[in-house]
Picture 1: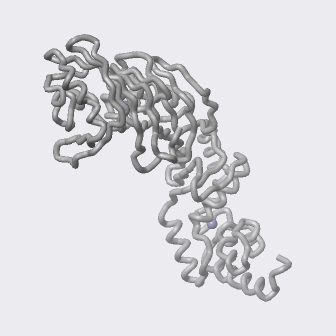
Picture 2: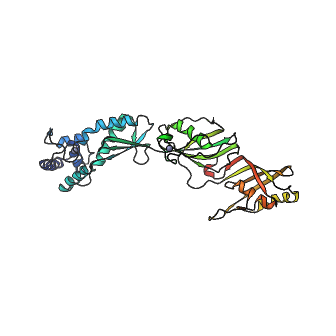
Picture 3: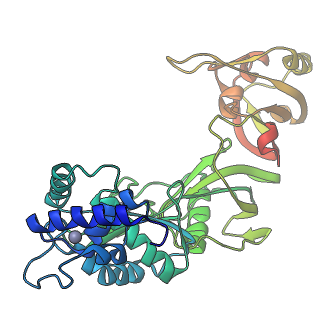
Length: 395
Ligand SMILES: [Zn+2]
Ligand SMILES: [Zn+2]
């Protein structure tokens, strides 16, 4: 306090004496109330210097905080225990206190016209943060903390929220009859409950289930939400570089995970799964190379088949009931007749074209059944290659 003038010290002491004549206060609260005037950080040491009643009476609790600051070691020990299963390097503290504590803080500050000092709750969070950071060797981060701890002084509980992580990866599918999406838990409809162990899935027998199970285990997380780049049939295979996807991990306990370049799961193979900062907000444009097996009702006519290549020059219109017509493109189309009613079609198309509808019905214009003037059925379709067109996510 060398740099602070005697005059200021005297006036501060005078103020503190004045307050203490009316209220019993702890050193933390005194320190906070005089901090702005002296241009120092609030601390109990600062309060102690001005506390004329050197030993606060044991019977009289601090008027403002009811001696809440004395509980801090115990609270921080509890927080350390609760957060010990989490991997983190930054944190933020929040707290819930009795409204009367904030009210009393306001009362004293307004009565003695003390302005610009931290309020009692901020001060409490600040003191907890100092101790917690020192003990866990982690840093306070008000903007984007990995862990947020909310201490409730009303019931002495501590709630922890771990910031979500995002992954990008691709999968190839080597087994047929594996659905892409997983049914949600019947008990909670996907929200997460005790019976599904909070992941919200009914089972893991799908592409989604396999990926979720793998990620939940690696990151010791709760739920995993997958954002697919396109969809496929349960019978479809996916080869080439695989289908890209984005993934959000909720409440991860582990943040730094080493993931192999490739991982074999049941029926699928994961490629280049890695952490990214965030998911793209807009839809990601992509193109797929597809092979479609088509069966026709009547024998296929060569004259009509030859006209299939014309479809490259016209936009494909997808009519969804009640919604806007979506336009897509076909960049390449080839075919091979296996027998009089069987056809193999090879296409390079925009992502988002419903393949089955493109073969079978009028939801897509033009479509194969119309063009071949023949009722056609999509027997099976496989993806040979899927390429993301957006430069941000090219992979
Ligand atoms: Zn106090
Ligand atoms: Zn559930």
